[in-house]
Amino acid sequence: MPFLELDVLNAPERTTLGIDLGTTYSLVALWRDGRPLVLRPKGRPDGRIPSVIHFPKSGAPLVGWPARDRAASDPGATLFSVKRFMGRGLADARTDLASVPFAASQTDNGVIQFAAQGRKWTPQELSALILTEVWRTASEALGEDAPRRAVITVPAYFDEAQRAATRDAARLANLEVARIVNEPTAASLAYGLEQRREGIVAVYDFGGGTFDVSILAIEGGIFRVLATAGDTHLGGDDLDRALVALALAEARPGAELEQDPAFLQGLRLSAERCKIELSTRPEAELHVAVPEKRFVWRRMITRAEFEQAIQPFLERTLQCCARARHDAGLAAREIDEVVLVGGSTRIPRVRAEVERLFGRTPHCELNPDEVVAMGAAVQGHVLGGGTRELLLLDVTPLALGLETMGGAVSKIVLRNAPIPCLVTETFTTYADDQTGIDFHVVQGERELARDCRTLGRFKLRGIPPLPAGMARVAVRFALDADGLLSVSAREQSTGAEASIEVQPMNGLTDAEVERMLKESYAHAREDFDQSRLANLRVELGTMLRAIEKNLPAARAGLDRETLGELEEAVRRAHAAEQAPDVAAVQVARDELERAALPLAAVLMDSVAKAALAGRKLSEV
Ligand code: ADP
Ligand code: MG
Image 1 (cartoon, rainbow, N blue to C red):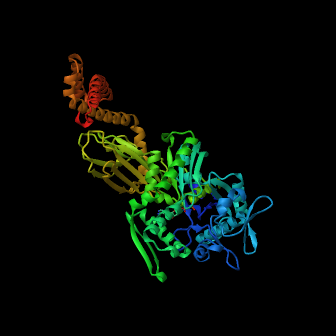
Image 2 (cartoon, helix red, strand yellow):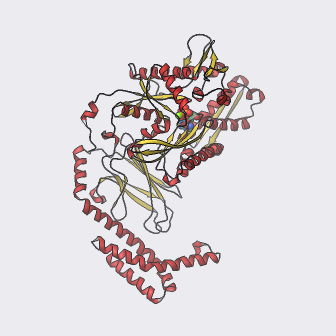
Image 3 (spheres, protein in one colour):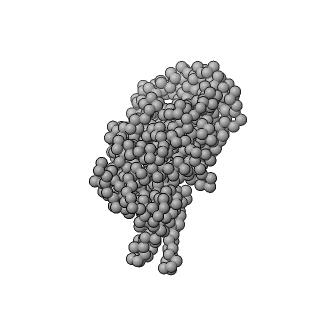
């Protein structure tokens, strides 16, 4: 039963932090009240901690926001991207070392060291500074000392040395590591995908400075990495630089400004702002001003322009995806779930390209730069002996679906589906030249719409007139963590769209949910027949109309005997259309199908002949 189990709620919980120790930002979350909660100190709604360290002339190093604030004024004393050096030696980190403002050397056992403030710092020690700041932030948000136990995430491609370095960093920060978890696994946990028990997940992580894609197999609720691919120097920063290049080409600020780090930094920040705005708006301003030099330049950038500028980078990410899928030995249709991670996946074009590549709507209901920390908190909760399957809020207690032609229900979100969730299905038109569809959103386990609870109705207009079955309407059910359901329908050729939002659990008590479930068990057999009957009738009706439309072609192309059989089958099908039992309708449908085969051949033939004669198919 999907109801609250009191002993679970009251079970003592060994609280464990979930920490996303990121290249550009780190984030911390904790399991609270049945869900992972990102910890944000008061007045800091985003909770992210820049993974940045600044070494002032004297005094303790600054970490996080204060360090980032110094980055522009004192770039020579500020260190970014420590994560790139974890567990690596001088030789294999050469290219990354070029961007570090400090002299690097190596310890006797091959660990990189940076010289700053008269001493040497290993990446482990620097990461420990970040983790200490993360713990402090968590404590500030909680208003008390945060737990010292933590699940920490690392990229799936991290090798043993890199993982060991991460553990060392945690130990130096006085944290007990409950487990090191792969970032894509954490993201999948945040979406509750382990509850599938079995399946294949692709996790597309496009962050600030890195891109990676992982293909995971879920087996008995456990994740296994099948393949990873990526580019450690491809990220949102590249997209910013594309806008900077566009601005420089048009603004022509002159050689002096183009060499000025403060000017370039200002332009880069403006480019990032513009990029972020374009994720929600059709156009945004790119603006840079140097008042001292009386230099001002501004211009509106359209989303189309931006998309064109970033396309080469998107192509590279898609190539990595194809490679990972290939390495895992899987076809596109074998990927069951796609998860988006990283701030750059907020860009609508990125989502669209990923959806197109995998042929599947990716999960993006959760904040893409928070999912990894949230998943780490889920893992921490489970390791601490907590369960999540039994928590009411995590699953849908009743199916959600649409009434289809004939009165049956097409269930879109199944009972017990983990929420938040997102499901997309494609529907089509029933009649020729049908330009609208009425949607009836229902909730319940019964098979006929009239036995379910009506949640809402809406209409989609503006479907182009097409033969029956040719229009493609993608219907999307998105159920968010608060239980709000948005249903939207979109015709794919014109983009015509309509949607509705409803609160499925409003006015529904536990007792009613239980009654609805019991009724569905009691009527299971009869419901099954009713729904099958409804669907068969629709199928029969569709076939009948298609055949009748082509009767002239049948009369011209079929011999008398075959034509007679077809006409007889049509007559019987009409008689059976309203028959009350499944078997009668089924027999009529099967007969009609058989009798129509020669007609199908004739039609194919005329299409083929027309093609050979060079005529367009639409003229046939
Ligand atoms: P990382 O995992 O590499 O530390 P994040 O996942 O936090 O990085 O992603 C940071 C990147 O996401 C930055 O390049 C930032 O500009 C970009 N970003 C954040 N929000 C948006 C948005 N709304 N639209 C486009 N890009 C965004
Ligand atoms: Mg990240």
